[in-house]
Length: 158
Length: 200
Image (cartoon, rainbow over all chains, first blue to last red; front, top):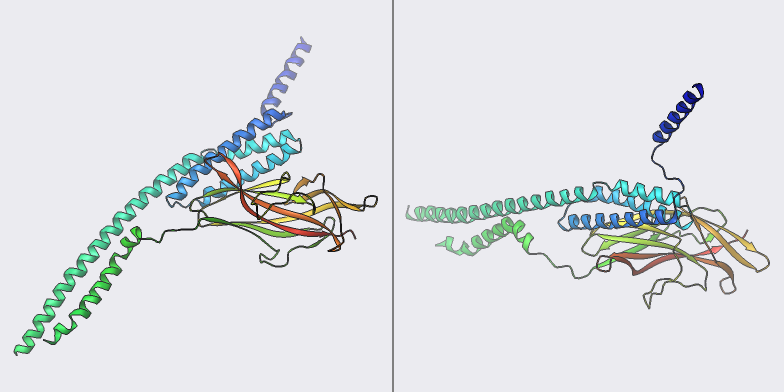
């Protein structure tokens, strides 16, 4: 009975220890590392396409670019590790890169939408204010011209 | 009436004022079209100027340069800078045929650059090599670039009698992601340094 209790305790500690170890990859194969790296490359391309759209509409993409740079750097390091046969590091770095890009595309799309709206309201405001300014100048100039003309005429009559 | 003589002046002043007021709207519709779309790629010395490039290098000595990209393509671009090292006889990038070196890259640096923006990175490198007395050649083992150790294979550098030295070429090729091809392609730009690899 005592042995069984000790065995159960040992199993419990082993399971607890296994579960408490942070997510790390041990003994990754070349195929596994390659698959994760390919996935990361694809994610980066999708993210790049998203920020390219944001850039096209004139959004400020500097913050997103920094994140993408970091992800790209991790992927480059992963490639280096892969080429030297260190598949564990390659997989880990590629996974980190991919994790960094979680929510990136939705952020980029949101930024694109916001910028489009801002651009639209900017166009409306500018057009309205310029039109108003042009009307003021035309009306003001005509009024000013006739008033001066009238004043000059009055002065000539007196 | 004397006032009528100023009619033209009045109209011109009014017209100028009108143009000033509507210029923000005009600028939205009238813009000079860009006709040239290109990328810039450069290599600068340790003080971020086109001077003081490393030339005479020693084993383990650290050297700093800056590499940069300017994007004038009209859209955000995804670049890859391939780091390569060769001797005087190995394949290098060709300016006339616009082809890249056939040598494998030691490392790739990924860069994402917005339109009309630039990107620059410091590159600190050191070389690990040895003089082989039997072959009278320099054998290059590896290079450390920004703390990453890059293994260099099959690079043996012979004595250059014309320039009196052992010369290795560290060069960087610019590649760009082509969304149509879904792949990177050589962007026909490269920069590099010829290094006199001293043995003492």
